[in-house]
Length: 91
Image 1: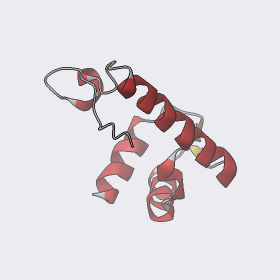
Image 2: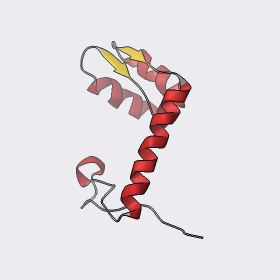
Image 3: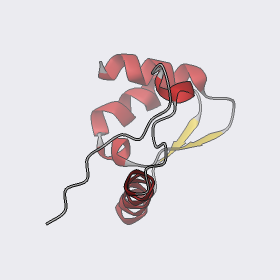
Image 4: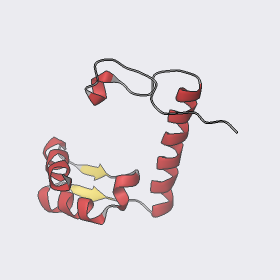
């Protein structure tokens, strides 16, 4: 699966620099495979920036969920329709 993801990523890049952020940036096997398969210059920022972006995105997804707004788009996931995914558990 990781090899497939690395191939799909490297095939989709346009010429130039590629910035990898989010949780996947911590997967050194994945990022090494992307580097091996791509002719682009791959940039992975400092861990704090990667983690900050990941936290920010998940906070936004949570905000959308708790406000019952779509946080999963069919155009991105291939689902039949956009919906509000995830669970909310209050104490």
